[in-house]
Image 1 (cartoon, rainbow, N blue to C red):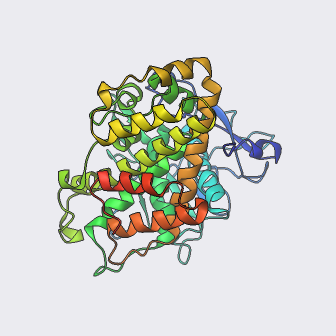
Image 2: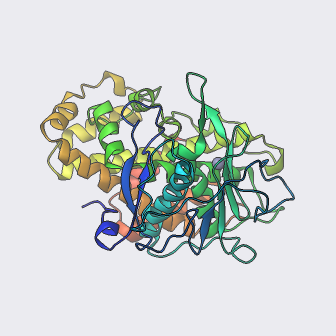
Length: 405
Ligand SMILES: [Zn+2]
């Protein structure tokens, strides 16, 4: 059975309203009530707790190279919890909703990854800054995670309207991903930093966002309905990307190989931000493909598709002729048993999440290369489940031209 965060409900957590995806997307206009792990009544105004807090400056520029939190300028009054200690009394448009949304989303992402890691994540900046400062709005078209802070600007949606990133779960989860990776692997020395390490950081943060989003049942259903349960993506633009329009899934289900991206051989400080994101995409694609492999195994084990179908679809994907294959056996099975597909996707999500978390814990930032990551992932998988997945995982990396040895 997949992991469930519903345990925080029974254990007395705290309620928030979160958008599972950007509210501009069809099906995600209304926030969902979720439980985070903070024990009821322990969160203060802001919201805030012992390791993170939100402040809303009246007028603040993004943090630059030299200035660091805490922010000491004028702020709007922090939002209070309800009498019962929750934050779900706030609705979109209410003062403080974006602050509560940012806190709740970041805490939920930490809940997901602390579950996979089996323990708390400690900020890498804790020596100078015991708490993460979160700022839901600065006048900027970006969001970033730095030494002791995370802050959000806003970005144009497909219609050109500006949307606050503090209400975008994907963006918040991606930035939290950087924080988790720094906490687990630390920072390279300036001499030891490679272009691959920078690409990896973006890729892994996208994986954090994708896997965290799959903990919303509404998002799982959306992905399955949009694809009729057939996650075996085309190597060109695929249906998940088109229909969900979410950045992370679009990035994840890409068809890029290492030879399609530039800059891997350049010094880490000479590549542009755009190149860094592109560099991460073949790696993200490999992880996505591994997730699809696990999903197919789950469907076979549950008797939802036959072993022969799984073998055919894998061979077709490997030879880039997946669009020629009749995939009705899969889509028909989904319409007969959507709950079985939901379980298989939840299991695949957790199989990938557990392996990534353990792999990232072992990453050495200095001199990082993609093959070392692939080797570490294979080693972790072998420790968790023997040789069963070895060949499939190797093929996913090799298709992207990431050679484990
Ligand atoms: Zn990033």
